[in-house]
Image (tube, rainbow, N blue to C red; front, side, top):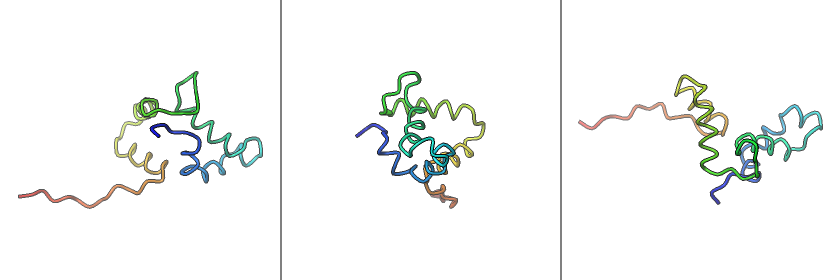
Length: 95
């Protein structure tokens, strides 16, 4: 629907949420773990539970600025979101 929300995160992050120390200790539910992550991407100081494309891009622009190597950033994002590795096959240039 153009927004990232709790239900979207459950598709990708449910397993990660269950590994969170506060979930494992019983302090937080799975939804609370996921909402905490969602709030970290949302507009600082005004999380509404829906992350727009602009909010998502702003968050990851900040993350990207802290990582010097673009290849490492790509690897980190793929790993974080469970995306397949970038193809290592070289594309042949037309002659």
